[in-house]
Picture 1 (cartoon, rainbow, N blue to C red):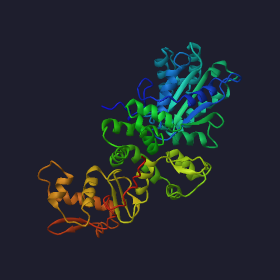
Picture 2: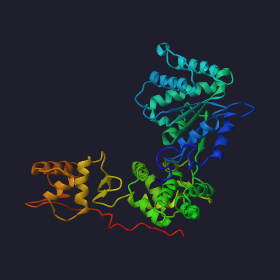
Picture 3: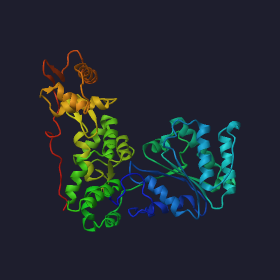
Length: 446
């Protein structure tokens, strides 16, 4: 079992925990500004799997003896109404701080909640009272805005209401939080200050590599990951489990696996407009494009986590692994294309959305692997209903009909899945399969 942590946040006591001391100091300065008290609420922004939740854990651990901290995750709270959301915060505050304060939201939500906060401050032994709010994007839009309005009200009167001057909110999230804070009409305008999480430095990468006795490989690992927290942990984990592998071989193993991290970024890229996709492709091709976050395409790519600012002030792809894994599939060629890694099916350059069901995808993937070949009915039955005996011809025909309805312009005149009478089926008009596509550009970094 690997020492490296590739799922979820890293506990500050875990051997692979890497401290974000510079970021902590920046947050501390906002909350404990000696002249004016709390000057702004920190909004920690970063793409997926860069360590936002880990940073919140570090804040809580570091200030356990000097601040009163309450951790609130908004994941899974999307179906709550406003009273239920406030009640959730009340319950977590009471439980985490050992309080026993009751509230009655029948007399209104916002006012009652604000009064609860004042009572909570008066019961605390350590100040400030910090609410660590993670993934506010998990709330419905109207709920997130309403909660942000409460945060705004507390911030605005912090100098006149003594208790509110002892309360601070630290928000963490990605694109949803950026959208909530960045709108001109947002309640959080001039309330929060953005703090972007950077990738690990080479020195931090060395610290991580040392855990698995990979010190000698640290620079090679960094050359591939550029310090991306998740990718660095993942690559170190592969190398620890397979000590005879080179770094380049470990990278190939990572790229050949089906990793949800890559699938998520691919999907986000494909969900963006054509201008954003083309901008990403131009950057990846080596074109020099100025790093200007006021341009929508550049800002979108930053939020997804695909690009970074290089030392010359231009855009560059965030790391070499992203160069390899993201862009060969960004704009598939014409015809029908099946991406086995992501589970996506593309027809004439358009993503099939919603995706096929599990069994439907097994059928199209099986036919795609044998493009232009006749696939017998018995083989199709085994591929789709593995382990099930006696699959009828009618069941096979129904499955083929369902897939045709999804991919064919006219299911009555199929152009992709053809029936070969007395034999089975043949898939035609395929885009090149993975084996026929141009090989990825594995570059040695030794």
